Image 1: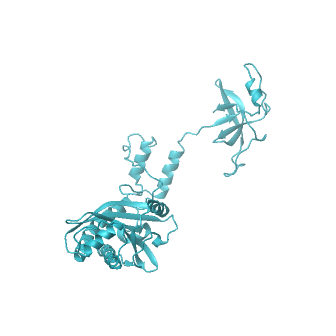
Image 2: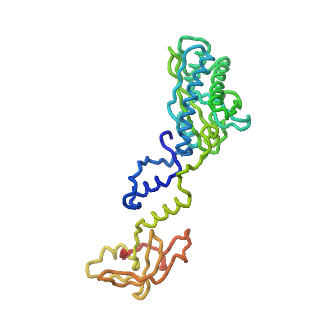
Image 3: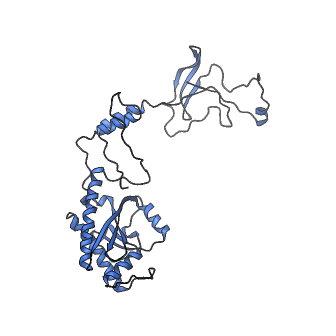
Length: 343
């Protein structure tokens, strides 16, 4: 999304982030100003790339305005409304739910490999066609389909936007890969691809504002935003891994000492009273279990130390259980009553 990015972490920023959670040495840098991260949206571009994208869109606005003035005499102004990033399946799903019937013109470096498209809402399409025909009155029936002549003029306008992209970034060599269509799936995407959407407003003096958008695969925008690279001050992958591991090793983990289990009927449970003796399913000489997140990690013997319960580690279950195994009670399953002590 505009305004947020996934930049490479510099050593200074890593120290600031660790300081924010209490793992940096005293006297370090103040906590970093961190924005909320939305995992449901892609973050393809670095801060440097987002800056280049902003420069590109500013130049694109001026060039589109000039292209439209050449097609239709008059003064045009073009402004960017938003620059956002989307996953293809989510974006297409939102468009399907909205029942919008926009006009689309796909483009790319070759006819069989489109990498982007120009999206023109139906109301915008009618407004542009009316202006290109020289009509001064705004069309009242905004739901009607365009005539063949109007579609031809709209194709010229959409092509002018593609030409503007190539003029602003000479490294781009985009051409229309077909004609106007009324379906979004022109890019033949699988759903997990990441797309950049640039929404802009076009206004001709004396006419209403109209809105359209540029939709392009993020991976195909290298001629626009440049190649992602690590700055001179960026930390190496080894440094980042070491810092993160050092922080994780300081995290607290809740450990439960599981003495034993037993199974009771509801009648037996309701009849329990103080001073009753509840027999458990483990002998006094058998080791108890140390459990983390429901997984037995160690076996040990119950003991005392400084007047408190303690556990002497006697067995290591980590080499027995694989990461995908679900630990089960050695005495079968059923409704269990745990006697727990925390260590």
